[in-house]
Image (cartoon, rainbow, N blue to C red; front, side):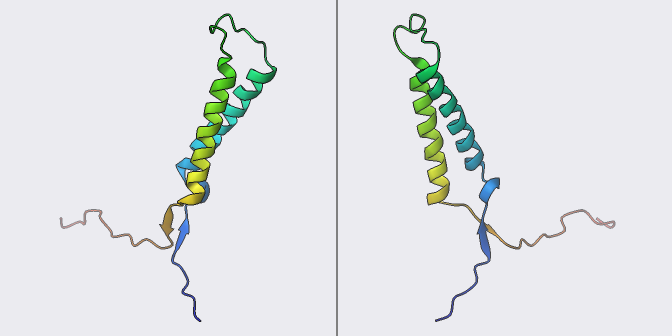
Amino acid sequence: MEFEKSDKHTAGALDIRNVIGSLLAIYGVILLLMGIFGDRELDKTGDINANLYAGIALLAVGLGFLAWVRIRPIKVPETVSHEDSSPKAGD
């Protein structure tokens, strides 16, 4: 059985979904911890712990982005043919 070598690879760290997912997850963890351990100023938010709920939501969305990258990675071709599109002297 012969396997063909793929001429494509994944975008990896250059995929914008990694950056967005990581930032959202980090901010979500920070807000989640602030909601759990921080000063509870529930009077300002109508007896709702806004940091806790916002942290949970951001963490869920961030993990969703990171899962999306794992499930459907972007395939980038190994070699790209570049045609010279610059104007020549006679043009």
